[in-house]
Length: 113
Image 1 (cartoon, rainbow, N blue to C red):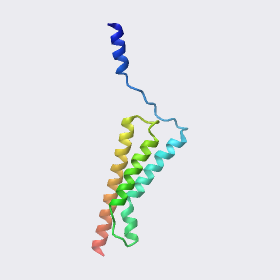
Image 2 (cartoon, rainbow, N blue to C red; image 1 turned 90 degrees about the vertical axis):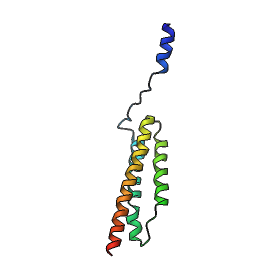
Image 3 (spheres, rainbow, N blue to C red; image 1 turned 45 degrees about the horizontal axis):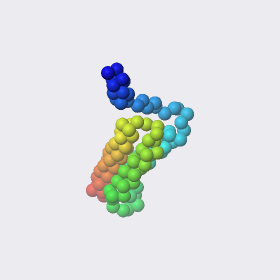
Image 4 (cartoon, rainbow, N blue to C red; image 1 turned 90 degrees about the horizontal axis):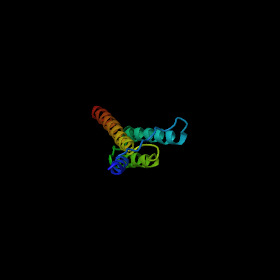
């Protein structure tokens, strides 16, 4: 019975993921650049309005999704699965909030012009 309990205990052990070391420059650069890129993509309606084009949602959505998932793929060895899911969710949420706010700003300024 003791051997069976030990085997069950090993099966339910959770793999511990250590946070990345501070000297892990490549992981930090990937992490920071992906967040910077997603935030810049969220501000695309402002850039499109300055180019006198109507803001679109298709291309920024596609780019933001692939940046979020692609950076998670590159960071998969450094973080747990839950951390990667939160990374993707956080990037998409930040992109969406910036995109909606910048689109609202562009539409409000266009209505007054």
